[in-house]
Length: 280
Image (spheres, helix red, strand yellow):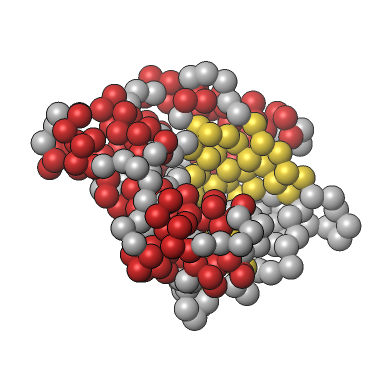
């Protein structure tokens, strides 16, 4: 448990090439002490590996009743989600190390297609055996924060350097969707790539985790979340249009599906931490 009066540590590190093409950053935090214990974590299109440096389990909770529905220990992976999940806020934790992948770029580090972990949180030993458990022990054995980043970077390069390839057509589609979620047409994108629609959907699900249409909805939702975070007086109809939604009704329905709240409710409850909403 974090000691009373202990200063919070929050550090990030961007790995060197070629890892930085796939990993957005490493995050290490310690002595995080929010006033709440449970967060609603919204779908963001990302995949993460979480290395918990505390031996106590962390829980996933039912979104409505907040009863414990899953226990996570030591190391786990979180796939692309299409619904929010309620998770431990990190309060009283002895430290966490997070490998945050770039959107859609986690595929080379997993031994199976990404759709097998989508909408799921899975213990690392069920995916990689003891590899990440051993990595966790090495992190715990080194007190220097900078050394932790070096250890994880070296581990990923040693074990996955030969895997760092990606289907160029999927990467092209992914980048177009990320750059212009509010403007992109999947039909035009599919015509540009040249695959049959069925084949492209399979490739995309294998490497990203979910179908292109579902992923694009998440990206448009994320654009809306970012707009809400930075806008004072909000014109909801204009925001829906600017984020690529067909109309305001579709915007509201999708927003509720992804967050559990209407856009107005979310704007009132947001915490300043993007995609994390305190619920208990």
